[in-house]
Image (cartoon, rainbow, N blue to C red; front, side, top):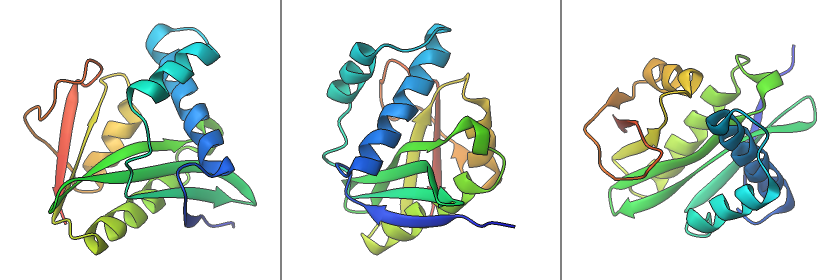
Length: 155
């Protein structure tokens, strides 16, 4: 049985860029109920760039880059989880959990005592993952137009 490997990479590395674009195409497509366009993906990157991420990780299995996640520090003790994604054909195999472990450890090493995130209602599998790993729903901490659920975890 194969296992997940999670490695830190630069957010602008080829693997990171490829996974971020795949992630955005996936969530944009799910939101609109049709395939995302390159223009929509480009606009999503412009609206919420990754150049301020403190760390970014790529998750691989069987030699394939299948997932990613990163975090930014929003204040000296609070990290924000960003871009958690696992390819649809690899979901349910532990990649999301492996990424959460790496992100949480990285956040702690950057001084975080808590980590938070926002997500949409239709991303049911993501919400289940967060709940299984100790994230609790909290009141809204931003006004992102796509955010419908907000979570936080003490680290």
